[in-house]
Figure (cartoon, each protein chain N blue to C red):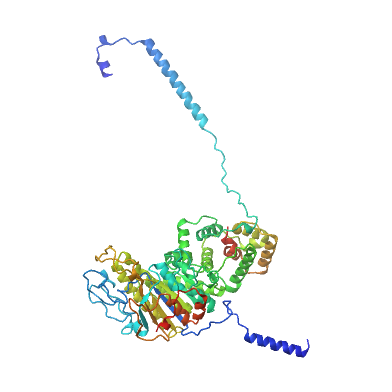
Length: 189
Length: 447
């Protein structure tokens, strides 16, 4: 460029105006095409966000307790128990520590009772109020069976447990959950 | 019913009641056939592989290390003999130069002086798990797996089934949860098993920081108003489930016993928090902590039988200095335990203690040097079968050394279990069960 500027006027070559016009036209068309493509791409990519709904899969209930034949490991037991009580996942390190603690105690029933007692002494346990339980005991029992045993109670079970709760004034949702968590059926899946 | 008939039937019923066997709480029909020579027995599995030379041999470094002619007794609470005077590395302080002082009650009065030493016995296994099994089963079953419950019944089950002891009368306190130790509290034998098992704790795990975080803040429930209905509902749920055949066997603690154990655990968490666990004067390794908690079990439950497992000496695979330090501390631990027994009113003068390693260690070292350039020892050769046993308590001869030589040992490791059975009156039943090693007998029969 500087060379061109420095050149004396007598040495400047004449510009081919027609060729330049052609080049300019080609450049304009190309630029237009690019712009159109870009706009088209932009328009096509801008889609309205689909409404996404996050939900849990429907829990498949056992038809009866007869299908439960596998014993939970310590780790499975504490993980599932924690989720059943707190409705959230237990930290992985806690599972490992509790597994070791369970191995250090010979009577596993004692270990489980102590653990459950500790859980109920913590904040965050998802527990219905006693008034809520008493307001509709049938619903409470059904929900308890589903939560812990992943099945519905049969008529005999529902009747017995309902009578038991009604006849034991000290029975609270906490004690009902305690019983379910300690029950033999809860140790199986 | 006519009067004569009534009287006749009443008389027959009374006669039948007099001769019929009575049902013990454990479910067994007959009481034990033998008499008890003590009300309590504490069996210390002085385990981890204890080389004869550094223990009963009192050779300290003399046999074990090249150009280290320094003999001596580093187990002076248990054994009678002079301590080393040079090259002391087994104590406390920098380099272990400060030997742990003899516990007061053992000064001039070692456990050996109070009881009987069997200086040359034979183990059935040169390995740890096989050795531990041979102590509690009274046999070393060749097919015993390493991650498997004992194949044959253990002394815990014999006591509960044949002696009628309840679960909280029979305890096993382990040094940890490694090495399949938690599997030892009952066997897989179908005629015995979990319902006759011992209560087990590995206190170094149960009562550590994580134990406190997860289990140390249990809610207290009213026994009648809350726990009773809770257990009733659980019983109903269990009965409903039982029809499908997947019942869970349990250790056999009654609800009252479970409550006692939970209360004990809560007490221990409190004691750990306020630093009041009955630890030995020196408590700087796992064995010493294990024995501290074991002494708490003794005080709280006063069990008929408690077995304690120590094994810190197993560091000898790679560190001889650590081994003699652990051996010195294991001796300190046993002394502390015996002191606790003698200071517990229900157990003082009424308890027999038996200490026995599960196996020894090799005659020749491996090539691993420790910080003092001392060689280490594994356990696989014939020297690893050389063990000993020490016993003290009621009816145990005082200041006695039983016979036995290297070539002609007196007693085998399985005798420890039979001795416990003998003391607590079930020796005949154990022998009749037919699972113990041939030739096994009570140590009392060897005297």
